[in-house]
Length: 442
Image (cartoon, rainbow, N blue to C red):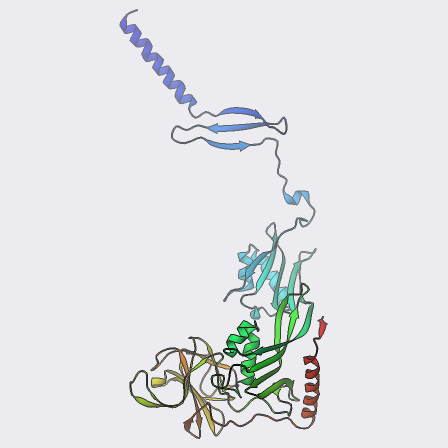
């Protein structure tokens, strides 16, 4: 065979091999293997590409998936765990339900039924909403706006929703709490694990009588009576209001009990029917430290001695400031070195002023009437100030006077039938102090 023939044969062979390769390179091939649990064959399809690693896709020819609605009649009997959503500022129930996957039509239907039993504008921030969905169907929604009741809306057989306001079964018991002050009232209360709202209640009751910066000493005692509410798991879910409170300061005893008078007003009274409230509160801020007293002092910014015509309470920025008494706002706005400033006229004799606020309570205006203890603004450092604090002044007959020493007129004193009923109320308090009562609230 000549050399030319040999070359021709090699060329033809290469052409044939190349043709076969390109015909078969993308073609799948199948391997079969027996499964260990049955005689069914599992076919594995392997696609080969020269530029990538093999990828495996399994096809099980004998496996079948039956849709849930084909295997059950009506709603699924499968147990579905609810979705939990915490309500945030600006949230609406429609937005929450839509975010959980509910259709707008179903969400709107459910909301219309809930509105019949509860005002959704009062949906509390931080509360948990439980949402049950099944196959993209809204089944149930529940939440507890308060510790003693819950709202439940559930899908009925007729595809409509039923909403109910249900009372939560609770046990209520009296708790008497007693403490001996070791460092400060606040520190002692924390160490003894007194609930914070009870501590705030105690301070507010005695803020008319007690200068918490100067009059509290080690060894002084405090006591209070309040309700606690327990659920069926015996867990405390709520602390009620203070029913009775007592302080023994350097041997001097002060005590007050809650009572609702014939006008329907709730207040605290001593055993003789005298209200705890005075014309003005000495400390219109909770838990603050008296940082500067009334009198002549070296000004921290100006650098020279100057009369300080009020008292300063150091507190973090944003702490609420209360109106020291009932009255009408005479001035609200910026006032030179005072920064953001409020002045309240209480009567023909007394006014109070509050300076260096970070902001005012929303909606307050000049000539607005405010109640004693209501929030009027928040601690700040506006104006001529070295740090966050409240500058507080008491103005008597047009002149600033020392808020810590001014003699304040007493509040209401009960007479007649109200006084008789108060005496009966005190007898009941004394009984409760001597025993622990347990009743069931339906």
